[in-house]
Length: 312
Image (cartoon, rainbow, N blue to C red; front, side, top):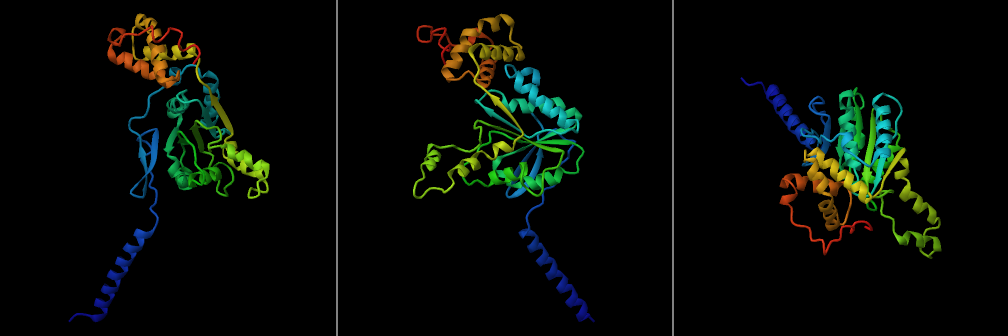
């Protein structure tokens, strides 16, 4: 004979399990720890709403010695990272300035320099900065030292990541642990667009702010929370040529070819409208891939004078 109490209890447990399963789908997903030994660099992202921390299997192999013409910036970032890895006090860093001058490459090179000593890098897109507190909590008890890397960072008015990053840098009750720093790169020094209309508030328009200066202070408050600023500037012609030659040697191009590549390198930069380190790297890749100067299109010296870059 079937026990009605037992049947009733089983039915209750089944309904309870079904209810718990439905409730679990409504709870925010929990960030799971990755295999920290799988790589030195990780990437944080969301897949269908689920936060994932992925190991970067093929991280950039650039070394500090590969980067030329940024020696002051290199030394200051190297010193700050050395302090951090050694367990001493160090600052969050904002690298700003001209495009293609090595800001992101310098951070990647520092990772390769200090990874054997326990440095780890976690790349986070600005759209995911709202999850920074969860990410910091995940690594808080780890023995490694973590750099949270935000590349090409800039914000528009009202973006949620702006407030999250601002609080994490300085201002939140839950401060970042001492094994976490934030390194960010940006072409904007203050990370927010600054417009001429901001200055109009000082004319005290009828519908303007009572304290217009405070609006300007808000726009620069985020960048000021980075303890170390590193500024990068456009390269001169000689600096650009030195970088191009460095990359050609990196790609094992013969010295005689490098010596003859001056004019094609200048033409390449003139066509791109820039003498950045990125352009020099792209020229070196193209030349090395073509197999030398003989494979390049001829230089039309009548339309492109040899000194055409001197005044760019």
